[in-house]
Length: 79
Image 1 (cartoon, rainbow, N blue to C red):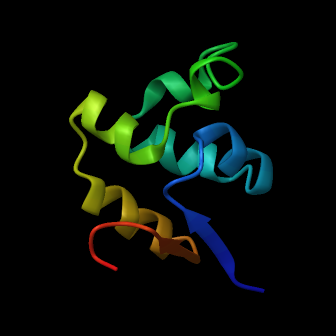
Image 2 (image 1 turned 90 degrees about the vertical axis):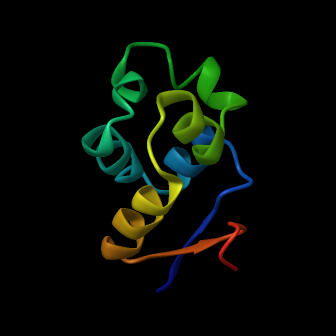
């Protein structure tokens, strides 16, 4: 089964569909994702590209890590 990860969706929705996304994002430097309540508040409107820009983490690096974990990443500039 292909795991499709749409970068236009909120982090909250992506994590609901694929809980393993939390660890990938945390390990790449988006540490706030594991703060209590953060996913249920900011995560509802935050997207991965917005979070990457906010934390100054290259989006390409995040996409590569997600692809390494078996995700098909859609709706990013390289499509």
